[in-house]
Length: 195
Image (cartoon, rainbow, N blue to C red; front, side):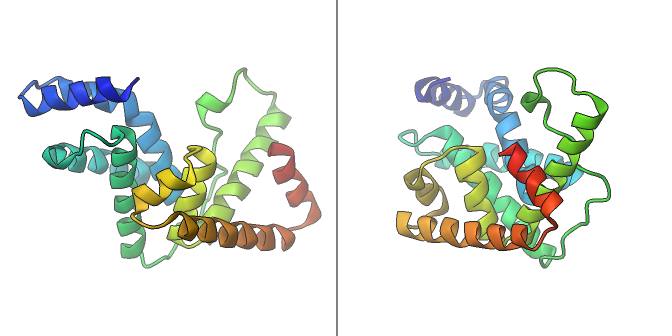
């Protein structure tokens, strides 16, 4: 998937090809959903947010700068929408009643019951730790460590400076370390086993 082929699909969409945008959705639906899920911590809400992000991208496609990465532009729309949702929630987090299942892409074979239980527990703790961060810090962590974006890419996406991103990540890591230090040793060990 190259930037050139993304631009081609964007141009075809703008020219009226009804199936062209569907190709872009297929390419990036997983990335958009994963970002929304990491930000919002709830599958149903993440699905709604992903759908809304694609609708916003489609309706603003004429504003897309073909010199930029389409994926970065789309993830920027997604992150902004998720932050809006979090603000509307007034930072009252939905509690996780069940541990988060591991994402299918992260499992190569079917784990045994004990391994699955430990993985679910670890994923729930990681999601709980993310939920404890402010939306700005959480977004920076997700974009850096789940999407492996550079400081420059994150800064461009969030319309800020690289030093601001480095600062957010430093503070986020401090907050995560403090949170982890407050956990029982057994919980800390389970998180560290997954890193």
